[in-house]
Image 1 (cartoon, rainbow, N blue to C red):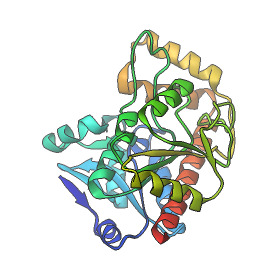
Image 2 (tube, rainbow, N blue to C red):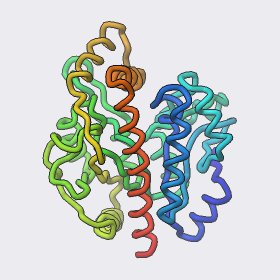
Image 3 (tube, helix red, strand yellow):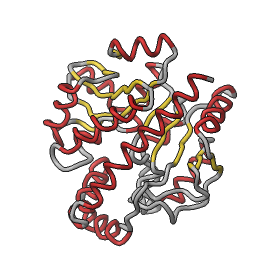
Image 4 (cartoon, rainbow, N blue to C red):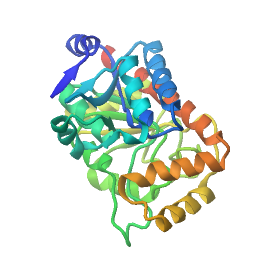
Length: 295
């Protein structure tokens, strides 16, 4: 069910630094075809920092850890027709032979099975706005309580309730670290989020905290890195969420719908910033992974 590429398997066996990457961003996160370029750039940045990239997806009845360019092209070509594969969906995709683009949660589940400790992404899921009316919490959070993986992101996706998500992460015992920042980023915006529970200034410090956390038998951590460029999209988010409700868009379809609306309303500026922060987060994840590997 889990198949590791030869390079990834060799890296696991030798204790080399590895960074897992998701495939939802390839199929669902960007305008048609653009996600492939983002994925390839993220892999390039991971290699540049001395780690091995391990992009995850479900293909031909296997959870594949470490995809080649031609395999990533399949996700790009499939686009919205690729199944959005969270932790609950992996077995279904495997058994039915469906192409599954893994979310952060789905990728974390694969990391647990493969023995990979670090993951780079754009933003993690969390508590959706309007939870009191329609309870909705991303499976990413549950998987963080099971997978001993440090996730580097630009915080929680800004279309969610960031403060409520931080509170739930505290309840779940998941450390959230601000990367050289006293407050958490809001995905597209570097500032404006709630205070970071802890702040780290070096990759060695982040690696040491992860090592200590795992030595206590705990699971996931989040390292929140502010984006290099900021864009205020809060008014656009509210409008997009209203539009989603009017069109009865629900569940896993909400995030790609809202992102597409933001991309359209900003004339592509949000796409450019999103691309950069994903690559930058992948590079930081690689740096922490290398620091952890060398001890």
